[in-house]
Length: 296
Image 1 (cartoon, rainbow, N blue to C red):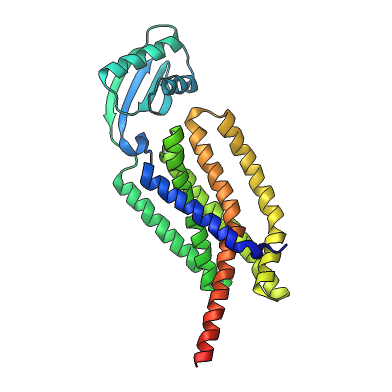
Image 2 (spheres, rainbow, N blue to C red):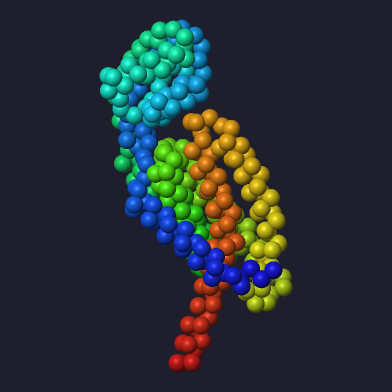
């Protein structure tokens, strides 16, 4: 199939998704969770066993921003959530009392700072930049062309930026929060995107070495030969993540959704962003080369 015939459509579609993501971030910002903003830790003592999922669901339904619920001893549960006042703490006790069927005792209350502070964010950004530079150099050396490395990195940042933009839109309309798990999903998406891209690039290199031909034809053949493998691999991940989104608990639902969006983006970007960028770069470079040779 002539996939590259429609590469302008792929690039325009990606540009629209990037523009929508940019609009979402500017218009609605990012809905940061307790991990970024800080909050409170409250320990409660229960007379009966209750599940952390029931506690989290009940408090979320009442409008409390719960970050985590943890069992820390016999009948004791530690809840981490956004900062609350005295009246809200009494409401929480009432909600938990309905779950326990008796009187719930507040053991301790502590105000805590953000677990993901500015310094950690700065180090994460530095780590992403350094790893992206390393990937660019490695891919360029392996495929003996800078355009392979740059195209792979652009596709990687394409996926990550759209994922962040999606979180902004989902945060505004559905209350999705960006927390530590979202950062994990974002970094996983970066890895998945590059991995899938290198598979296609490797097939391009193999066909180019064995058969040669026009680069467009080589790219089309490489995409066709890796498409089934890519779809089969992604569908197994997508089905698992869909099950977690639909049937999983509230504490992991947004994490699973972020991974789901990242998986779909990574599957799309490898053949329809990284390769079209590679082909377009080659054509533009060839045109400049011809113009330069004519002038000389």
